[in-house]
Image 1 (cartoon, rainbow, N blue to C red):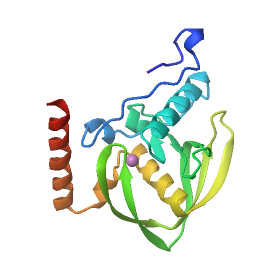
Image 2 (cartoon, rainbow, N blue to C red; image 1 turned 30 degrees about the vertical axis):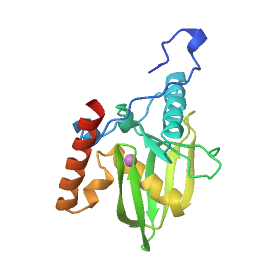
Image 3 (tube, rainbow, N blue to C red; image 1 turned 90 degrees about the horizontal axis):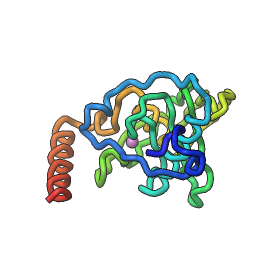
Amino acid sequence: MKGPCTPDTERYALAKLAILEYPDPRLRTTARPVTAFDPGLRQLVADMAETMYDAPGVGLAATQVDQHIQLIVVDVSETKDQLRVFANPQILQASEETVVCEEGCLSVPGIYDEVRRPARVRVRAQDVYGAAFELDCEGLLAVCVQHEMDHLIGKVFVDYLSALKQDRIRTKLKKRRTRETA
Ligand code: NI
């Protein structure tokens, strides 16, 4: 990763970050609040966005790139030009109405399954400069924000599935990793 301490000439170079893969125990880490809204944070956001778009994915939590701060990036647009950054996100309100959505995760490659979540959430967060904002989320944005926020408390979407399914997923990923290193 190219962090904030890289030479000036490379300061804004975008780096693809390594994504932790389930069941890596580091995915169970509880993230601490973002306190420094500095160039280092903005570099991390840029690198996370690059990593997410490259994957490709619609969301990424700092936890997934082994940075344990409360930070997520999301872009659910078709055109991939509507990056949203949430530092220290909190859910203020969640609808009673729920939706079932087929979810996937960059940390659980190739696995998709249905998860039920509140259909709408109102989120409070801070931007990369520390300014607070509130946002009403629905549809895929609501699902994605909740999925990414789960990562910040060490939770992966697989946790919502049956024990049997979780076993199968671990076996499948293990086989996949064995194939890749063979
Ligand atoms: Ni995920």
